Amino acid sequence: MFTGIIEAFARVNTLTQEGDNLNIELESALARELKIDQSVAHNGVCLTVVSCNDKLYTVTAIQETLEKTNLGLLKVGDLINIERAMRLGDRLDGHIVQGHVDQTAKCIAADTLDGSWTYTFEYDSIPENITIEKGSITVNGVSLTVVNSIHNRFSVAIIPYTYENTSFNELKVGKIVNLEFDLIGKYISKLYLKR
Image (cartoon, rainbow, N blue to C red; front, side):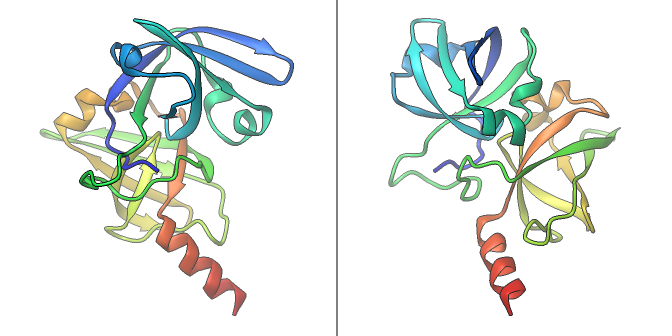
């Protein structure tokens, strides 16, 4: 379980194919605090640490993960948002995030405003995956508030702190991002659709 509050960046150091799996070696200041078998969200995808040292650590993404997320599009040098699993008893500063990406979306607009940024995303319509005005959404692992929610499209407003401390500062129009829709909203949608 995660909160969508990004702890650090990780930069892709190497990508190694092993059968259908992709081993992703990452460089991060957080690497020295990690341990083998620990869950870490990478652009919102929960992956297990399989090796680590002072500056580098490795996670493995299986074929299903590569097909359903943007991790299969990674290149050496790419910046990734990372967050360790939350500890029981910690404050929930973002919202409840599972680290299970529902689908990807494309950034279709990136607007610089006077002191903030607005990004708009478009995704394939799936009945259970909806946004609501002022509801929660996770984009590349970042817990955000939805603005301008319409059918299969929504926007988010980014403050300077989020822009500087997440990979939003590298996000361009046309880029593919991971989405995890609000857990409570998904349950309600599923129940409603069964009626």
